[in-house]
Length: 272
Image 1 (tube, rainbow, N blue to C red):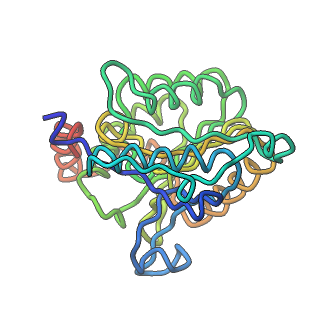
Image 2 (cartoon, rainbow, N blue to C red):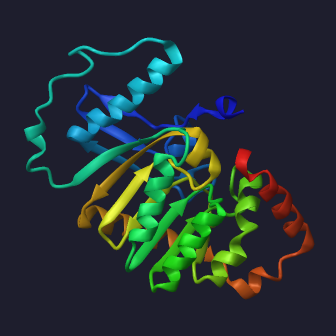
Image 3 (cartoon, rainbow, N blue to C red):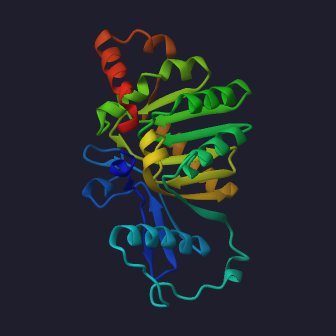
């Protein structure tokens, strides 16, 4: 079953071995719009140069070798890069290639580190937000120690309604624990970003669900830089203006039909 579910969800574009792109993007017209209008998707992606590009290219190479049996190598694909070229780079960054493994995965470890490391703010944008019981407890624990924990996720505009319902099945626990949840209203929200304390951030393909954490190959650029974090926090605040905050008292009034869909969807959350 594990092998059948294993898939490549990485987003990799590498140009001449020197310019890299990753994020949540796909190759479709829905990504060409403004992320606010019908037919468009809201997403966040990152363009970068430096040694992290080589790490992104290695991610592609590993997945290519597994899929085809052929190892990509040579100076044409991998031009010489001097590590010293990054000495004066304005942003300290590294590429996380998350991959299925026995025990905890690197995706899970990154998520744990970012949640437990937060001291002031933890702002998460995630399109398929179905965290495990352990992650929900960590998010509530962060809120209880005074961290401003906010989650921006999808609304009924989701392209996978079962995942949306599965996530909503545990909203009450998070809201009761002090976590603030917003659902993006205009269109499908597909971004996967995390910003910690206005300093540490991540942009990539990793969702907060079991599929991304356990089954998928994922690519995330992790950055330690206040300017990058400030830009991501500004994007988050702009998205909030187009979102509806879920209030606990109102959410508890939802009907039995929604509760049934949530319960059934949550039961199959591991394979959604």
